[in-house]
Length: 260
Image (tube, rainbow, N blue to C red; front, top):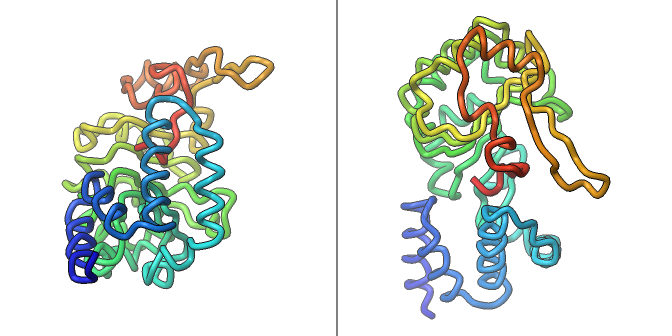
């Protein structure tokens, strides 16, 4: 396959980061380990969406990543704090919110970014809410607990600014855990009309805390059931309920962000 054809396919992939057909065409064109990795990760994603773990396939993908991942990530790796390849390409990045607001067009020209974890968003929350780059995202997280960026919290003012954004309508996953949000802000998230396609949302670790599902597991780790904690039940009684607060209960399995 000529380099011109491959370059054209790469551009096509970038124009629609949510479509699998262009990725599969590119995988066929490039062949080799790269093409195999794209095909395998798409297959793994399909299994995960069907509720199957695909352990052997996951290990195969990880082995390919350990050998070739740095090269396959490309120049986006130098522009973000962390990156992750999903379905064969860099889809998930962690970076400063200020960098995202300033450089999102250039970043989207380098990678199929669908998931973003934002660092230090509070100082630029208004600019972030106005950023058109949010519209491409399917997953957005401000939960940095347990990472080297854990001191940064979105806060109530940041959450209010974010909820005013008109660019979150395609979002499927939102993680606001450990964001130093109080009840009024959490209630505003639940009542927001700007998140019509949200499927999974996390509010735990704020004020009040324990706003989560209580998951029961069998001795071998198999999911037995899930129900809202007393705190979540009381919260929804006060402020209304949303299906995205109960993803495990509704699907009867744990939801991986990678499958969204």
